[in-house]
Image (cartoon, rainbow, N blue to C red; front, side, top):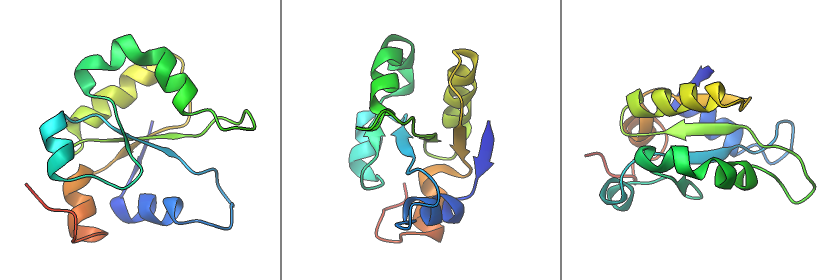
Length: 117
């Protein structure tokens, strides 16, 4: 598992030159948290449902041309997402990134329009 800052992930997502595959942003927070603050384009799969949604995650990260996108796990401050990232690696997933500081860091460092809570 790799750890990236909010700014690093934002730069990666914004890379329109295609120098790196666009990641799947996987938000593992609960519905109320996602409704409070979220990153545009993120897929919400709560931590409590990850084990039953492995096949869905595999299909979410596959592109139309069959390429596999890296996954960036996101939560409030980075602890839950780190647990999910470790679990996904145990399940054989590769190219897993944890967003250090979570959505809170994203709000402070990348997009102040995303509320903090």
